[in-house]
Length: 208
Image (cartoon, rainbow, N blue to C red; front, side):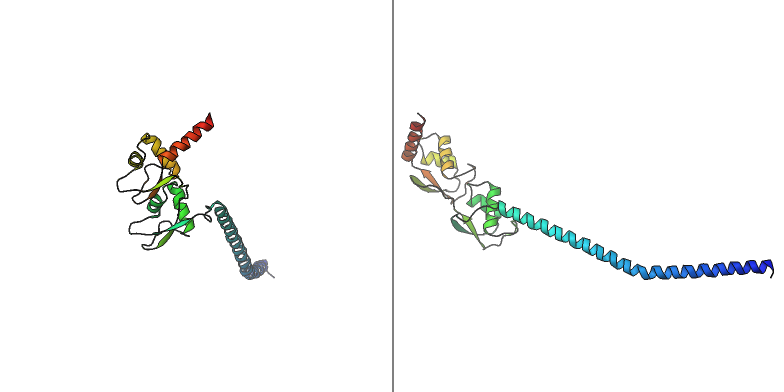
């Protein structure tokens, strides 16, 4: 056999072997690919599921933490407020609960009325409002009139006292945190001057 023919046959045989090897290797890889894809998909789904489960646990823990920080309202007395046009939870809190800071008052109203969104209020809906439980013995009920403030009320109802002192007394009696927060129609309690004088006398005697 001529060397040229022999060399050509060797090249052809090598090419055939290489082709067959590549063919079988490709076939094998194609058969494995779906399984690997499936396994990867399962792995991704598992990781995703684990992440969702982890997030759910975190959210559950956060809810539990929030529950432990909620305001205890079980023993509070309540009244009812009907939402009017233009009302917001902030304006209602300011109007009906002046003895609390606004944020605490809003949070209390949210919890008591199971409001998920403090921005959404329906006109005509009824809200439960806590009553400011104070000791009213020796006091006179006073309803705030339009345009009044604590200083004008103090001068009117407790004229024998310094207005600033009278304002402090009224604020303490009514658990008011801000002297400027008064709404028309709000009920407050004014200590009788004789009762306040007796109270101060007792305090002074105790300090002697």
